[in-house]
Length: 349
Image 1 (tube, helix red, strand yellow):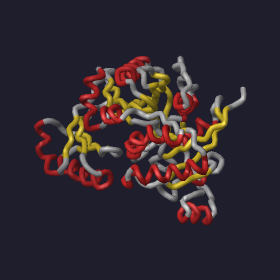
Image 2: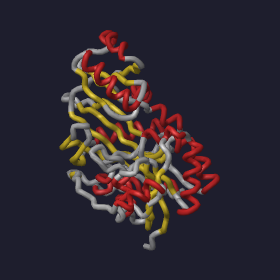
Image 3: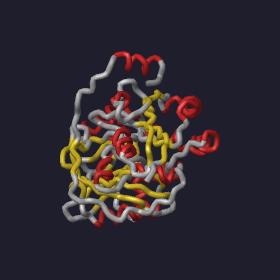
Image 4: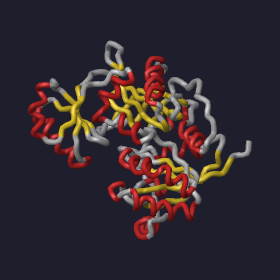
């Protein structure tokens, strides 16, 4: 089969101890059965390792931070598209999705650039601050949670919570607090990094299991692969994991995707209690950093997303391999200082 040549722009190139999904997404696309993919890397920082992975990223450009607004992002994408003729963009950070969702129609109509993203309503409906209500609407158990905007509110939490409890940032980071003093400390630490509000969540004990999934926006779950973490870093990130045979988890994932009519990739994070009950902790609105495991199990989710973005009909995957492990590793990548100077001064590499 002759592969179709396309150009895909991908963000999330920070393949560090808290990795972004960009490099796993790129690896899956480079191994596509349908496409011969040229990858354009989109970076926010000049030392994102993906910038210098020449075997995976064909050319890279810096783009403005989400805080810069959609106008500056659109102007930058206009320039990159004029040079590279982008077919599809896959943004991979929670914080940037709002901007890309807002620009999706304009990118398509003005430039012919396709995306495959949730609607703004879908994006907001699964936010950590309203996840409890999302669970009730979709028939999924979710630990009780509450938004707070000041550390002073922590001392009144005894009316709604017992310790330990979980302190979460609105985008990333979560810490388990055993005392009010710890809760205050985590509040200041996480809010300084990610801003307000802070989410306080009921602590549920059990084993963490995650699912990488993709929906077609019409209520169909195109693919889903569950995973249990085998090795966890001090930041709570999976450094090794194994695919699971868990029909209940797949059924719950299908129900969430179907009821919400989710469009695009996502990650569902669950706690499985010793009684065998599942509690949804988070629904991340993009592929996880371990999405390459899905490719290793026979479901290439990034490829499926690109196919749907380009208007192709994609049938749901019917199976996946159980007992496949992923094990991350780090290595020293040697690059010339001139490459760093180019991306720093010119914004291109």
